[in-house]
Image 1 (cartoon, one colour):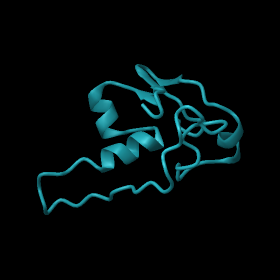
Image 2: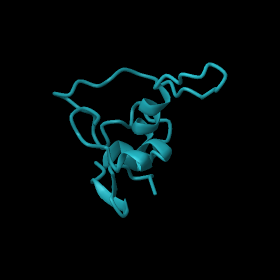
Image 3: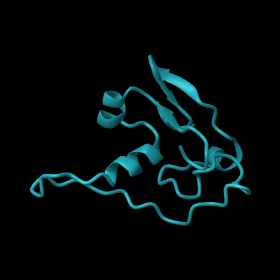
Image 4: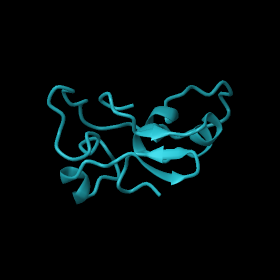
Length: 94
């Protein structure tokens, strides 16, 4: 969830193995890995979390999203099915 809205729904294995929404990817990149020899690249989001009472136009995540396109700034993405059992609220996720 981001600003109280669901951005991705999937079973736990699919979600952890192949997150589709940029916010899900950023969240999972922050999970500590118990093996210090196993590296992982952390996704650091820029900007501040918007005020939930006054979210930005379009996609609420667009001002922090590393993938944001022009459509993200103006059109709110619908939660849509991209695979069996997987829903994503992102214009660019496939």
